[in-house]
Length: 132
Image 1 (cartoon, rainbow, N blue to C red):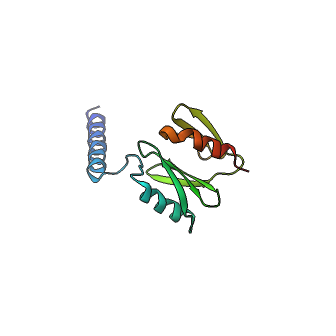
Image 2: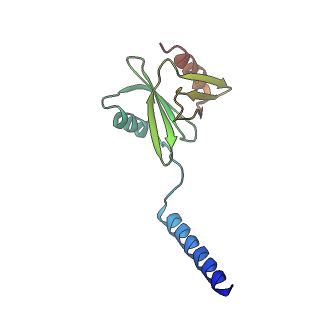
Image 3: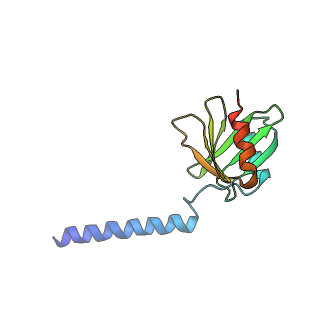
């Protein structure tokens, strides 16, 4: 029994040490977009040459919607500590709740995201509903 207790305490100490190291290194956390320039760079990295004419950022930086001159709409949604970029198609849906907009790409792999877009939410909802 004392050997098992010693092994348990040693394992617990090792796990606590790994958690402390990860915290100290700044690992984990959540992805955030700090400004329009960062959103523009993320969009260009996802689709080379995508030039947004209009950008709507979530109030807390948890995502963004971008529209180019051709009317294509890209969603930047958190995916772990990075962002997933999706061009919205006919299967995309948008649901308005005050100044918050819930966008679904229609993909099973990317869950719906709710963005706090303030006064812009209603206009973006109409744009997404008008795709196709």
